[in-house]
Picture 1 (tube, helix red, strand yellow):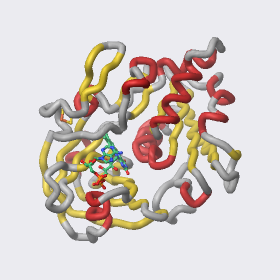
Picture 2 (cartoon, protein in one colour):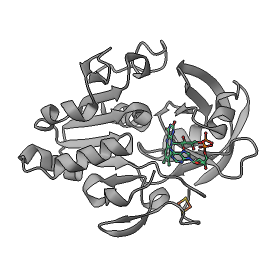
Picture 3 (tube, rainbow, N blue to C red):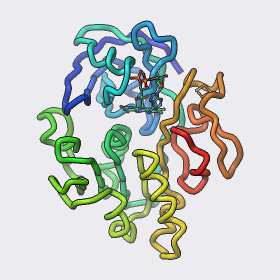
Length: 263
Ligand SMILES: Cc1cc2nc3c(=O)[nH]c(=O)nc-3n(C[C@H](O)[C@H](O)[C@H](O)COP(=O)(O)OP(=O)(O)OC[C@H]3O[C@@H](n4cnc5c(N)ncnc54)[C@H](O)[C@@H]3O)c2cc1C
Ligand code: FES
């Protein structure tokens, strides 16, 4: 874990209230693993804000964040060449089992952020299907979002929207069962309701649903310190108490006691 003052190389609103920010951080770009996160000091706020590492290049890391409150508003207003104080890389990320070929990624809304890093990390060696659900087409993170924001080359990209404005109409979890048979491993990031629906699905007797038990999910609970010192992120799991910032944020779906999780 390292604290650094890093230079912003770009900060663009790629969709309404969603920013893609690139930060110069060569050491972190080399060391970071998909699913890990950083914390950012946002202006004068005491608590740093956690964000998944969304992409890496040889010298930079990217964040994809939604403006939801004062900290993210401050971050959205930072300009190219401004410097930000970050702490990273933090947490334990996604893992890929040796021998797994077909990876199924399931993103709900801004949950796409860490899965893009996993996708880019794995795409040269694996077949990747990425289901991305959002309320409307305008909230889908597609290649049309912004010309330079993202490329899904080599990936089966499956959009789903609640209003049917792009892809199938419905939720990501509605179409998920149709993709489970082919998947060797499943990864997800999204809202609590999506995880609860997946946990419920995993308990149904169909053999392909059993794959969801080992599905790796990224949990976004409220954090104080972000590195294991304050215990504010502690959750109860089937394997005992865990700190999301240090033991996670990636956990197996089946290990979480979903009724007790508060996000
Ligand atoms: C491991 C991890 C990875 C994350 N990755 C991303 C990402 O890639 N993109 C993205 O847009 N958001 C991500 N989030 C959520 C992001 O941290 C919050 O949206 C952000 O902290 C809100 O700060 P705020 O000051 O704007 O909002 P406020 O509501 O004003 O924040 C008040 C406090 O609550 C915390 N908080 C508020 N909402 C959340 C939340 N959903 N999760 C955790 N803490 C929250 C803030 O950190 C702050 O301490 C992640 C959260 C975690 C824990
Ligand atoms: S946020 Fe402080 S221990 Fe996890």
